[in-house]
Length: 146
Image (cartoon, rainbow, N blue to C red):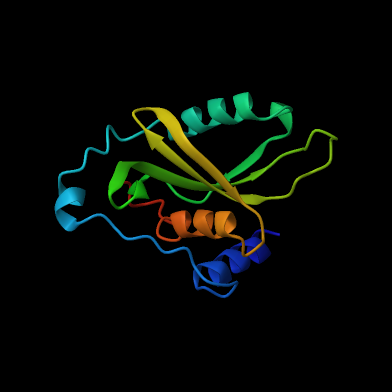
């Protein structure tokens, strides 16, 4: 399952499932002056607490981390905000008790809190492509904390 999921992520990241979501990046000057906040060394705890509050059956949550926190920005180029992105897969039950399936998830953390939580299915819809775009530069980065 993991190999198939990672293969789908790689295909999606390379644009194989449709047009990628493109955003204009903030200028190099804005990025240099950005305040990312403190590095979230306890990111797993921050994310676990968020997941327990978000899902109906916290005991069913299965998480696989695909990266450590990496410096990133979100929003729009004219109004970006900065922090750290962690990518993971989340598998849990829906309200009927059925398994949702492993979903690529991007979590944006700033100042010890989850600011943005986005999950992607397997479609080429904009929201799913946005999550893949959010994670494309950080998946697999475990030995290079920001």
